[in-house]
Image (cartoon, rainbow, N blue to C red; front, side):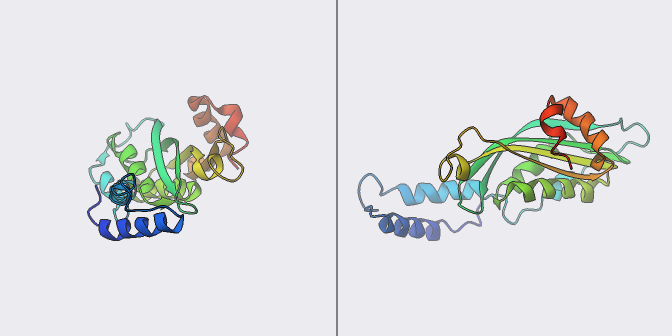
Length: 198
């Protein structure tokens, strides 16, 4: 858990919030809630202040034998929307065309986890994942597709519980619509995403 989070301050703020909505934070039902929320926030925001590029430090040179594409799909994604501090959940699909180096496959989900574990918006998250790979690996191309359900859409306001937001971030050769279409086909989403790639 994130040891930089000030749990005492969070707990005090949650007590104030409970009072502000008309509940008694000292009631038996709520007495432990402020500290449970503080522990949850330490987990949800564990990526604050962390540098995801460290996961790329053990990239290995592969010369001409890189293959055409590396795709890690269906990475479970959980983050917290910075607008309402409500969760959004879904999947990340990350592809890159190697230049001269590749990285262990577990590095990519770790990058997604660290960048998602901070107040976020989905659009920025995809761009940050893509840029981390560009900066750390210097690949020929990167494509990041995020699909997520947002608490601020599902649980308040319009209450669209089945709505998914899809965002695309690309760099280099994978900014080309034809190259993207090939990745979308691997994801089984060629029709749904083909029009989103512009």
